[in-house]
Length: 337
Ligand code: P6P
Image (tube, rainbow, N blue to C red; front, side):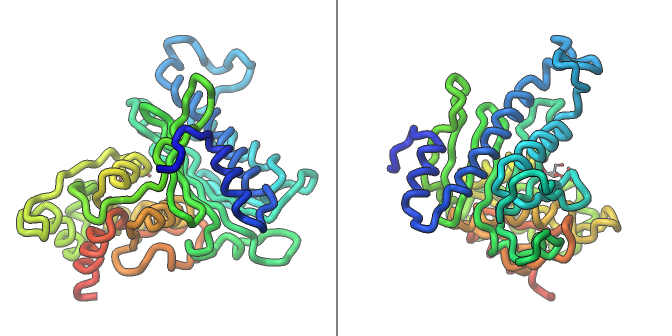
């Protein structure tokens, strides 16, 4: 087993040395992302104390207006990443348009796409939430980035991963050579390698879907979900239902234990015919992680990583997790297509 307990920075430097072309810019980017996540983790851990300790009325001790945590997380990430010197632009789930690095700041070739605090509605009830990120490179040789630089297939990702703010704070990420997990030791403020070379079980015992949407599903979706609930499935008994309603938490549990997470298209909201989850800042980064861990991710028909986005906030159905479970779901979903 790889020497667990090393810090994420040691881990990054080891892998940087292994890559002759490495300039240190990627290490710089991830290091800044990690620092931002430590700040977000600190604030998330205080969420329940906001009213009790008077940490905020409207103005906090620093004299700043205190904001909702997802807005706070978004502002931290935008500010710090704009100043890290190795990216040229960002896109956030919270911002309608691309966020460019201003000309007066140093820029680089990387593009960062993120969901600053996924599942933030769960903060008030102390349920796990997360930050999802995707790192790409600017493709065009134009001086300024364009939307086209962002609308790349998931296979173009340089790295992807997430921070999970739960009983402990974790970082799980891939650069295309497997998946490693790190746990924050708050006593020293370091992420330590705790889950080297994560592999998702080929099939699991868990299915995750919001079944309150059943009446809005097409028949093939109902048939797919019923497969996992049926004692007639290949496993010979029903899968257990687990649904936290926080994508990063549901995904992480299934990554470690095995299983499938599904957010199918539904007819609930005509404005979201392809479902609720976003391709660029949710589905594609998690698809990169799960494939690197031996799993799979499709939209019910096609591989998520092969999808070329046409919109910055394009939504996509998501079937993600253990390879055999996703293959079975995709087989049933594709019937009659
Ligand atoms: P629903 C949280 O709002 C989120 O974006 C994901 O984290 C989560 O998986 C999903 O929405 C839950 O959506 O419709 O089941 O409440």
